[in-house]
Amino acid sequence: MKALLVCEYREGKLLDSSYELVAFADKLGADNVLLLIGSMAEVPRVNSTVYLADAEIYGEYNPDLHKKIVLAAVERENPDYIVFGHSSWGWDLAPRVATALRAGQVSEVVDIVDGQFVAGICNAKLRRTVTPKTDTVVLTIQSGAFNFDSTRQGTPLVERIELSEVIPSLEFIGYEPSEAKSVDLTRSEVIVSIGRGVGKKENVAVISALARALGGELGASRPAVDAGWVEHCQQIGATGQTVSPRLYIACGISGAIQHLVGMRESDFVFAINKDRDAPIAEVADVLVVADIMQIVPELTAKFLKTENTFRQAG
Amino acid sequence: MKILVCIKQVPDMESQFIINSQGNWFDENNLSFRMNEYDEYAVEQAVRLKEQLGGDPDITALSIGSGRVVDVLRKALAFGCDRGVHIVDPDSCAKDPWQIASMIAAFAQTEGFDLIFTGMQSQDRGSAQVGVIVAELLGISCVTTLIGFAYDNGVITVKRELEGGVKGVLKLKTPALVTCQLGLNVPRYPTLPNILKAKKKQLVAIPVGDMPHVRELTATCTIYRPRKKAGGLILEGDVGIVADRLMGILKECTMVMK
Ligand SMILES: Cc1cc2nc3c(=O)[nH]c(=O)nc-3n(C[C@H](O)[C@H](O)[C@H](O)COP(=O)(O)OP(=O)(O)OC[C@H]3O[C@@H](n4cnc5c(N)ncnc54)[C@H](O)[C@@H]3O)c2cc1C
Ligand SMILES: Nc1ncnc2c1ncn2[C@@H]1O[C@H](COP(=O)(O)O)[C@@H](O)[C@H]1O
Image 1 (cartoon, rainbow over the protein chains, first blue to last red):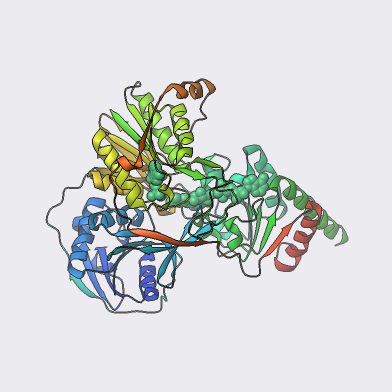
Image 2: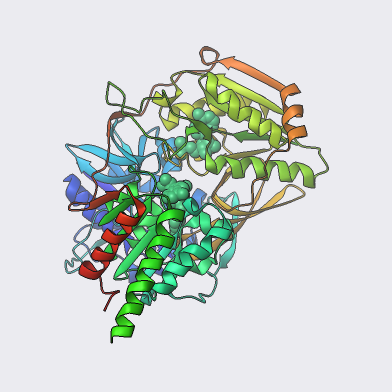
C-alpha cells in the first residue's frame, strides 16, 4: 500500500502541517512518497522519496499547475492514496485531482478505524465512517488529528519533477496580510467567548460583564465576528487566533471543528449551551445545559459577590 | 449573462439528531430544514451581481433533493433569483459528492452558464467537494473559499480566505465557478412583497431519472455520536443551583478565585 503525500508550501516555507500527513500515512500503514512544490532548502526531513517541483517556476498556489504536478507524480508512483491537508490548499486541490482520476474522495478525515475513514457530519455533531469504492483514493486530513513525532529526522531522496507548459486559468495577484491584532488573546489566562447563540449584539454586554468580572478577555466564534458584534482580532479558531488559557468559557458556541482547533489546548473548558448534544461537549470539562441569558448574569453576580466578601474580609 | 446558484437544503444544526434504524444516516422525521448557510452567501452574491449589472443576468437556483427542498428554492426566488430548478431525488442524501456534482454538471452543460456560485461546503456533509468537481467536469475556472468578489466586464477579482487571516487575491475570467465562504457578504432578509413575487416565479421539477446516473465513489457506512469529554460534567436544571455549582468548580479547578 502506498500513499502520495502532498506537502504544503507558502511564501518560501514548507508548512509544518505537511508532517501530519506522514503521521497519517504511518497510522494507515502505508509506505509514503512525498511531493513538494517548493524549494530544495525546504524539503521535509523524512526517510522517503520526495518529488520536488521548483517553486521558482511553479510559484505560489495555482490549482491548474499544481494539479498537473500532482498528476505527474501519481503517474510515476501509482499510489493507492493521495493525501492532502484539509486546508485552503488541500480542499481546493484534492477534488481536482480526484476528478481527473475519477477517484473517490473522503474529506476532513479525523481518524482511521478498522480501515475505514472517520469524518464529521452536521457541524461535527455526528461522525461517520466512509468506505471508498475506487482503487485510488483521495483524502484530506483534519489538521491536528494526526500528530507527528517531531524528533524523528530522516534523509529524503529527492527526485525532480517538471511539467511541459501549462497555461493557468487563474492569475495570482498576491497576498493580503491579516489585519493587525489589537487584542492578543494568546496570552490571556481567562477567555469568555461568544457565539451565535448569544443571539444579538445587545446581549454581548452581558457576556463581557462576566469576562470583566473574571479578569479575562472576550473572544468569539466566527459568526459573532461576521455579524459585527466584536472585532475580527477576537475570533478564535482556524481562521482566527489559537489560544490556550487556563479557563475558557464558551457561551452559545456549538463546537465546530474550526472553532475547536483554536481553543482545545485550554486547561479547563466551561461550555454553556442550551443543546445537550452540542459537539463542544467533546472538549468541555463542564457542559452547562442552559440559556446563556439566564445563567451568565447569575454567575457574574455570584462571582462579584464572593469576590467582594473576600475583599472586605481581607 | 446566465448565472447558476446551487443550493442544498440541510437540517437545522441545532436539531436533535436521531440515528436511523440502519445506522447509516440520521432520521429525517422531526427535523426542521433550512438553506445551507454557505449557500445563502452564494445566493446573495449572485443577486448583488444582478443588481450591479442593472438586472441583466438571469439567475437559476438549483437544488437536488426530495420534495421538501422546494422551500429553499422559494427562498432563493424571494432573494431575487429568476427561476428555480428542482432535481427531484428522494435519495440524494445517500449520494456522494461525485454523484451530486455529476448531476449539476450535466444540467449546467445543457444551459451554458457564465458564472456558477456554490457554497464552499454543506453543513451536513461538509465535504467541500461538489463545487470544485462541477467546475472540473465542465472544464471551467474555479476558485474556492471566497470572502471577496468583484465583477467588471467579464473579469472577476476574488479574495480567497487562507489560514491565519491571510487572503489570496486572484483574477479569473468567465465562464467560472466560485465557492462562497461565511462572511462573504451580509445575506438579506427577503421582504414580504418579494416573497409574494417569488410565488409567481417559474419552478421546474426534473425527475432524477432524467439525469445521467453515475456510480458512487465513496459510501457512508455508519454514523455515530462523538464521545463527550472523558470525565466531563453536565450541569442542568435550576439556574441558581447550577451557578452555585459552577462557583464551586471555579474555586476548585481553576485559578480565577484566589
Ligand atoms: C474554512 C473555515 C474556517 C473557519 N474558521 C473558523 C474560525 O476560525 N472560528 C470559528 O469559530 N469558526 C470558524 N468557521 C466556522 C465554523 O465552521 C462554524 O460555522 C462556527 O464556528 C459556528 O459558530 P457558533 O458555534 O457561534 O454558531 P452555531 O454553530 O450556530 O452554534 C450556536 C450554538 O449556540 C447554542 N445556543 C443558541 N441559543 C442559545 C442560548 N440562548 N443559550 C445557550 N446556547 C444557545 C446552540 O445550541 C448552538 O450550539 C470556519 C469555517 C470554515 C469552513
Ligand atoms: N443536493 C444539492 N443540491 C444543490 N447543490 C448542492 C447539493 N449538495 C451540494 N451542493 C452544492 O455544493 C456545495 C458544497 O457541498 P459539499 O461538497 O457537499 O460540501 C454546497 O454548498 C452547495 O452549493
